[in-house]
Image (cartoon, rainbow, N blue to C red; front, side, top):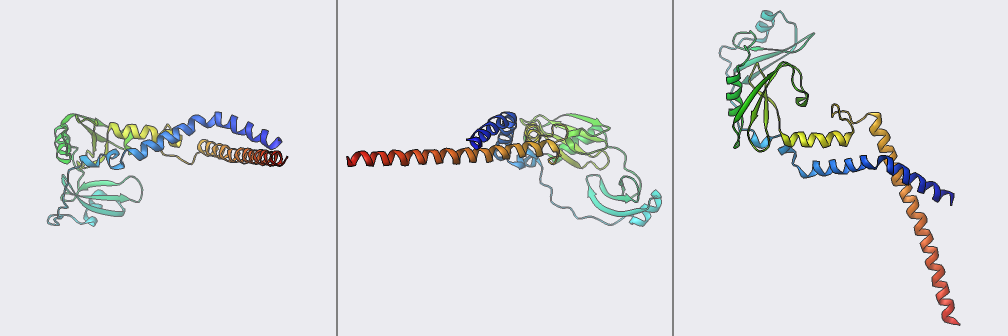
Length: 245
């Protein structure tokens, strides 16, 4: 009886405390399984761009670029971008530096007209560019830092492309679908501020309490099934005894 009362009390009150979060977990899981991740990432709005061969003609070497910038680099990456080949040097200290591979100098920031044109060229779908906004500090939803252009499209999903002001590359994509998904993701991991930390104490406590609900529920089920079994056996014996008189 004591075990039954303790299990009932624990099951009832802990379920009351974490019940709403369990609802969020289930709702978040449903959202994450119903909406394809490709749609969340707006991959269906990315125009196919076959790899273009990188021409090394007129390209400076990493040592020349490093000397011109006065940077001691730990790594150097050469890549093709919408504005031509660039070197990205990672210095011993500080942030990576991206420069033109032809001149060794930083690229001038793209204009609003260039941002619109580059975004439209990288987009596939029925939407058209309806706005472009420059951010000196990238919005939190990008998960990035530094300046960035946001180019908005008028499609049904409210798609936005975020572009590098240096290279014109599409760095990431966001949409109303992504924001809807992200809202439930944040509820799911109980991190409403950043949506990144799923090892914080709050979710560990909530998960532990939920586990206690499951365990106490199994205990209650076992006790009640045992009672029902005993009751059924008693009634069965009584019925057999009545039948023999």
